[in-house]
Length: 309
Image 1 (tube, one colour):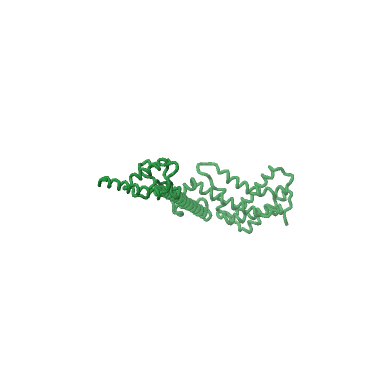
Image 2: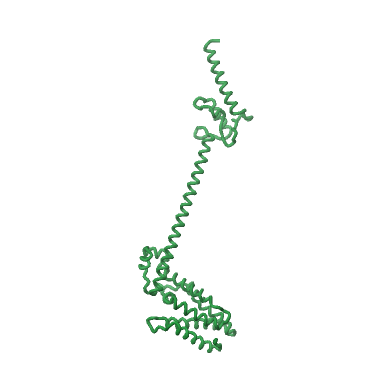
């Protein structure tokens, strides 16, 4: 055999030995002719993946054939290996974490804005209530409230719609507090309950005179109607005199009882309001209490009801 033929045979033997080494490392061929999978089924790789690809073109073609026969093709023309899939999945997970972080930050920012808005609303109400309580409704000015709250007039309007909204909110809280106080009067004896309601109303009025006056004195801008919910709250307060009158006058119809309870409530309110009015002749609280009791005595006697002794 000539020298050239010997070199050719040696090259073929070396190539055959290298191919057999890769085949042994990758495992036996797949019975269907596809490239064998590695130990972990999730890693998609062909035969001789460990061979340096720049020097193993035949093996790369064999591996690429293995990918194609398994239905996984790299559309970009390169190999799809386990490392590429791993980093692609990692990028997806990082993107998901980033999106979750952004959503969490947005929720936190919205929560902080809501908390700030709630604090500002409470602050505006507290300032408005303080001015009404100390100086009266006529002294309440939106610019004074905004300046004391450290915000603009526009911010006050944004929170409550208009300045009426501020006053109405304060009035709602006032009538709610009054009604809660009146509901605490014992109801065992209907006659004593009527006197207890009148006395409790006097005590509340003496403590919160300007706030209670604001409830009855406020007029809506542009002659808009007074909100129905506040009117209903006031009527509910009137109605607290209804149950004891029903027990005292079982033969009276509901219309008469309703009118009577409203008359009693209005009369007691007028006596107390005028008695506590500082611009007129103010009546000391103790004397005012006696006047309210005397009025109830006379009214109950007129209804045929014996007042308590």
